[in-house]
Amino acid sequence: MLQAPGGRDGLAESWRRRFEILDRIDGAYFTRWRELSQAERMRAGLAWPAFFFSFLYYFAKGMWEKGLLFMTVYAALGMALGAVGVPGVLVWFWVGALCVACAASDYYKRVEHGERIWPWLARRMPGFLRSTPGLGVVAVVALGCHVAIAVQT
Image (cartoon, rainbow, N blue to C red; front, side, top):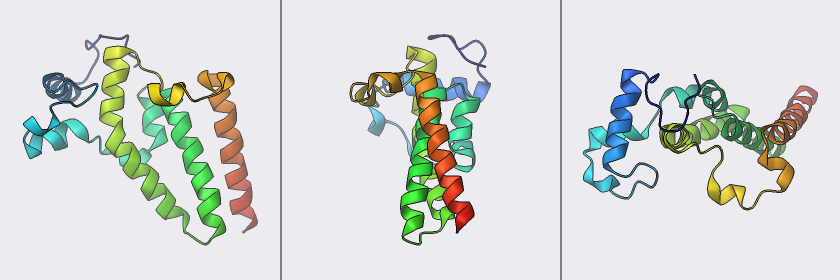
């Protein structure tokens, strides 16, 4: 369920607890991260389902733009590293690790601040990539190329 910025009503209890921890440390920027215990850091900072489902987890949480970017990164890395003999499972592992590290804070920023794409990246993207359809086209083309190359080998 997609949340309006600032709306925690529809969140699961586990996400509410996670958001409470992130509120204490200025969750949008993690300025006081070191004040947390190790257990709180793990609870607030890591969303383990994102490791297994990577960009699909982002789609399920309503973070379409970021999910499409992760899908594009997966496809591009799969093509580039596959060309030099790196197994695809290692690429999936790397993208999953990136997703698990980013998903909790990304979801917090989506729910609390309405962030759709990382601001540092949005400033550098061409105009057509700033929309969900534009990102979708690029992601589908990249994934299609990745699958076509994988089928040929």
